Image (cartoon, rainbow, N blue to C red; front, side, top):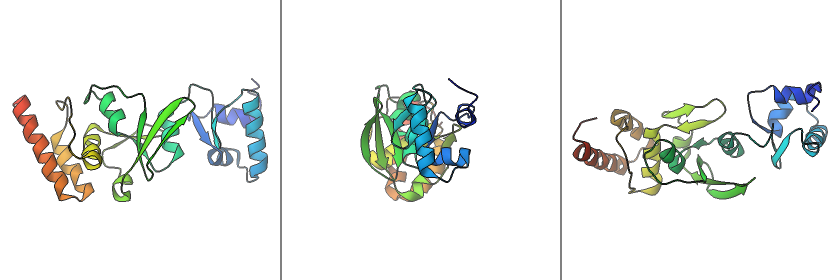
Length: 199
């Protein structure tokens, strides 16, 4: 690989693992899209970059799937079943990546399933309860269970032992839905009965 190539080197030295053509245009300060696309296609054909799909490239095949997922339909963030599994709130394993976005769709790209769930803009763009992972956002445990309640209604959680309930009752306000507060109260009551503690 010719890392002396200044165009290629500017991508490889970035901490990002995924790049849209818009990202690359900014990095290269390139306004001529045909030239930009031609150069990217050349790098991909020589296995110097990995083409994920039209308009999206990665340094190699070992790119961050969460980063790509949120970049594909911005604004968006990782959440729902993905975070439930990562945080041990639910014990079922999901190979698909779940994302909150302005669209609802299911895609398989580069061997990975992506499930996008639409949520209203007032919630989507509110960063309370979102964790900045550098090049993508991920919902906290508390934001996740509220998103699940909002989108799925009644839902069984395997393990709520690590939840910060004060944070939940603060975050629930962003949904502007009275039924959400009632549902959260019900989950909190069940939590106290199961674990015998206030928080």
